[in-house]
Image 1 (cartoon, rainbow, N blue to C red):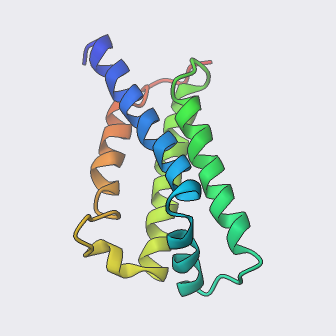
Image 2 (tube, helix red, strand yellow):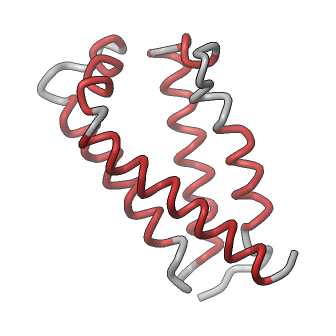
Length: 123
């Protein structure tokens, strides 16, 4: 993989994380609350989870562009996507068969993250 390809992959992932962070609290907030309610999350806890998830997404989107602990960043992305996938599989399994395939898309994104992940830890 060339340096340019790696950089483009990182920028694309950063954009994905940052847009997801913004959309989940700005334009799709009610959808998030409906999904959490469907999963039995108490109304008092739902904003914490929604904004917390958005914060995690934003942090990952920024971190991927910083030359700090890159292997750890990519590992955290894989863990985050896996956790989101498992949670959605239990509280909204229909997203596996949704026309836009939001959970199915996690699989190729995880492959891209794995491909871009540095093979050795960096500072």
